[in-house]
Amino acid sequence: MVYEVTLKGEKFYACGECGLIYEAPTHASLCEEWCKAHRTCNTSIAKHSIGRLKPYTRGLRMQGRV
Ligand SMILES: [Zn+2]
Image (cartoon, rainbow, N blue to C red; front, top):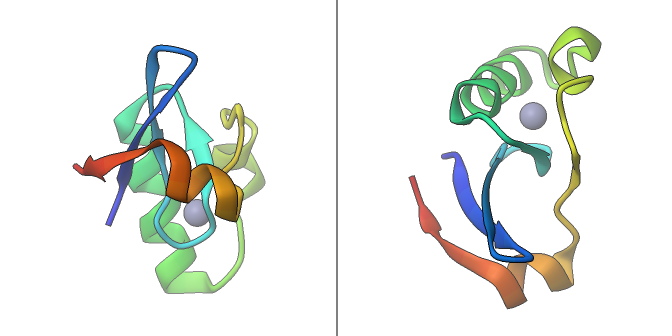
């Protein structure tokens, strides 16, 4: 499940498996598909990431699931 997160007033999308955050929802869902299938991160997808969800971020800024 890809998460929609708001950071500093902007919307981003996070992989529900590894927590990497992306600007584009397509990257987040690609990452999640890869994570589920391979249990590891694909660097060619992960390079698009702008960061990783931390537990406190998850609780504080979580908006909902896409
Ligand atoms: Zn992932």
